[in-house]
Length: 282
Image 1 (cartoon, rainbow, N blue to C red):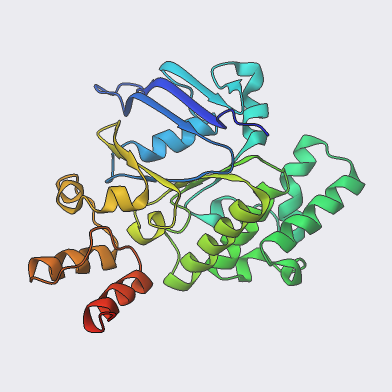
Image 2 (cartoon, rainbow, N blue to C red):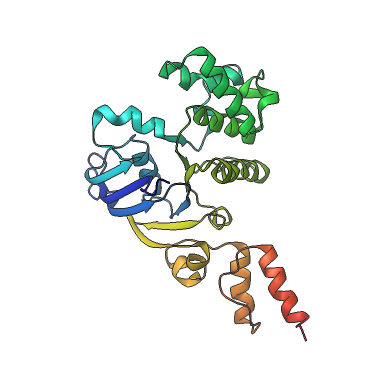
């Protein structure tokens, strides 16, 4: 079993041209195979810069970033990095290039020169994985936002990446589309072992991750499980971040005198704890 990190950042910094300060500075992080890591941060914190570094869209100004053992600073390795780390962007319309769903999923494979027989297998498998097989002959522009994003994910999956990097992939979707896309990615993470880096500003999405990195002013300032991170309500608010609704409610109820534990994340957890208080076991 491969235990080497899928992503290894060592003192990574990135400065945009003509910028006075780095957008990302001295970030070190290791992400294991099959891990689902959420990255949180306020607008301008550097989280999207981090995402683009993982896909070699940006190259570190300083430090070293290894993606599946490949150094992103090596120009001849850039396309290899992008095959290993597929990217899903905020607006699915920016990733859809064909007039038919099936052709859109095929686009990346054609650029890689994948043989036709292998291409057909990969397209079918990718569409099935995101539950879009029945829309294979549809026009992408007629699909809902969530369906478009699933097609974009299929296009990435067809390239059989080991890592899926989602940069605010649900930001432009309605609540149903957001849930649809997140459930799809979580299922792929669990069933196929794909490593996921999920950049988001939705706290309830981050609550479902294995681990959270909190970025502020270009630095990783907190790291831990969702429960460890979200029990720090006041500290997160100082960073201009919120907490999941049930965590916020739990904090309010504790202030009102209800003896609830820290770090409640879901409605189910809240209901269970309230039930214990209302009907204590004898």
